[in-house]
Amino acid sequence: MSSNNKSVVSYFHLKPISTWLAASLLTVSAGQALAVDFHGYIRSGIGTTLGGGDQACFKARGASAKYRLGNECETYAEIGLGQELYNEGGRRFYVDTMIAYVSNQANDWEPLDGSDDVGGGKGSLRQMYVKGENVIDALPGATLWAGKRYYQRHDVHINDYYYWDVSGPGAGIEGIDLGFGKLSLAWVRNSDEDYMSEGAQSGTNVANDTFDIRLSGLKVNEGGSLEFGFDYGRANLTDRQDDLNFDDQKGYLFTTQHTQSDWFGGFNKLAFQYATDGMVGTGHNGSRAENGKMYRIVNQGVVNLTDNIEGMYVGIYEKKDLSDDKGQTWMSFGVRPVYKWNDVMSTAVEVGYDRVKPQDSSKDTVDLRKITLAQQWSAGNNFWARPVVRAFATYAKWDGDKYNAASESIDDGEDDGITVGFQVEAWW
Image (cartoon, rainbow, N blue to C red):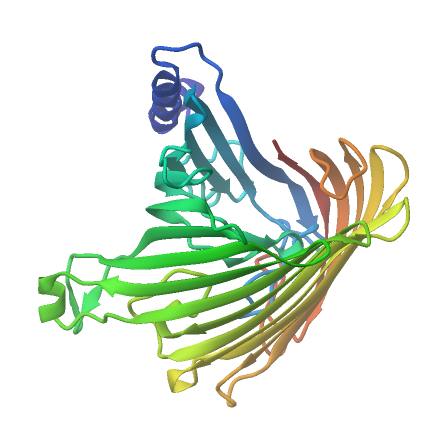
């Protein structure tokens, strides 16, 4: 493709993003001085697999996450624009927007529409909502919101696992002060697409609703607080879908979480979760999900062992008992200690282990062991300091007779792999 033709194609591929940027700027600046809040996240880099080929990434088959240091093979970005629209008499309105982009970081030219099979570039609208603070006189301090947003997500940083996440289009009110804690209520939707009804294409989607109730900020000990969550999810069928016998699975997700601050200079967070049927997962109902139940324990934290040594740890146990033996038990353990040489340079080591045992005894139990050594240069010496530029080397080992844990570049039957490369990560 000539450079002129590429410029024309670039215009049409980037036009939706430029339109979003222009519309966002016009929306938030109408009738007032422009003071846009710019926030976001990026990661990108380059790597290779020893023996040849692109950088492989390693993940145990069936695991919900993988340890990410030196083990991310994509370019990913979240670009957000926000603006305060109104602030008078203690009442405040704020609009927030975000688009996301992901590609395989394989080429210079990676279109956003997914037309490049190698680059695999895709874009998505992740947030577009407005929140109003102190707008309900009877509920001082509470926030009313509506639109599409990330909603009170809980994750583990070192393996990028979001174990409690009901994000999507919705509405709610959060931070209702009860005196002993804060109450939040939300209604969020996610849909099942390309639905098949009794073997025939229906041509319609099934709307799945999640009703989220959270009680947080319950002080139970010095520096410690509890949070309780109840999520009810159900398929919201139309009369026509009901007549066609569409699946209308529903379920519950219960969460209890304790957060301890001042934990060896950091924090510890312990979560217990129990889910049934359609809500087996992280917070979205599945209308076609299997019947069953799930138990999950997540314990994570960051500690400062000395002035120069800081690190994060996590342990996860998740058991899914599903109909037709489709469940599994996933166990995961990982640590990432960091040694700080000075205010900007550090060395990180990440060790992770994942084990997945299928409920069906005829299937193999698989595991994966992974270790990464990374030299880092960051904007500060805190564990969370970003941006950070890393040079890394990763080694992973698994049972090659059972499966291939590598995303690419390593042949079936091999049982280990080594990758090296560079990565940048930033949030602001």
